[in-house]
Image 1: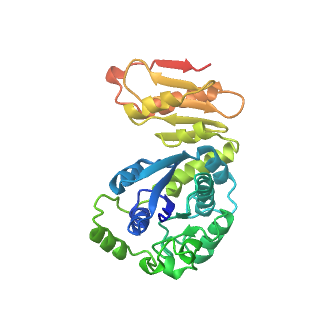
Image 2 (image 1 turned 120 degrees about the vertical axis):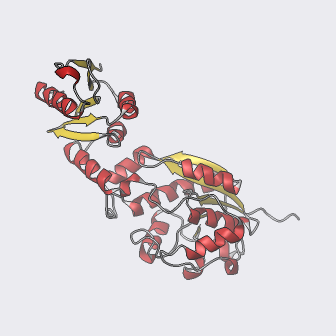
Image 3 (image 1 turned 30 degrees about the vertical axis):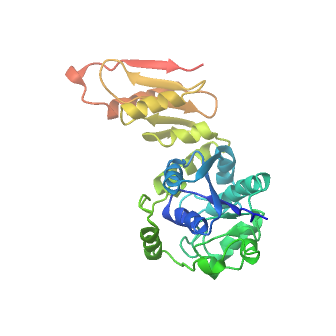
Length: 311
């Protein structure tokens, strides 16, 4: 009777740790499929490159709106910025768990390393994440498995525990050694792929949530652009270059206003009200911002503005 093929889902961020976790399983003849996520705060570009490097299939799942609600009201709080890492890990693993059960995979693996990240990768947090995601016993962390309780795939000999690792802490020395040994060359340097960990973006998002608690994804997208100014419950976003100007134009929605200089070069301003429309006072402020950040006024021309209202 032919031996059953063991199948595992690996959460693939595109970083070295998740690539190594997949490789560990592949070297045990386990069929691996990558799952990555995209949202308003991060994309799957690196994961796609990693999947190509590993020569495995990748499924990308959009969690934008669900994650935004978590960011507004995280059960387990934030990290240093506005990053609810524990809650986000739970959400991702719940999604992966649904896929595991639907497509009859045997277990899920991640590239988590015990002690590598203070908020989400300490023993207590890892236990919470496993329990709340509904994956107790079926969540394997191959890089730190020997420091953690045995999982069902280990107990049932689907995975050889002795071929797993006991990596601990923030040093990447062991991971780099393994990458070299296994011929993994194309991997990114460690960096937060999620903009929620960026302190400057966190300030912007906190301000948006304070002034508009019911903000939506299209409002959050504005925070990635240019210079931000507030007038009560109205936001003015000023582009810093032509590319940002085009980006702001693409995000304009009904009741927004776009302002730009007609007779000499300057930034584009998008104005969006979260209350009762854009006031004349805010329009005048937006014009002042544009004039202040515009290129030198040739021949001291009187500024003329093109104003577009989106209906």
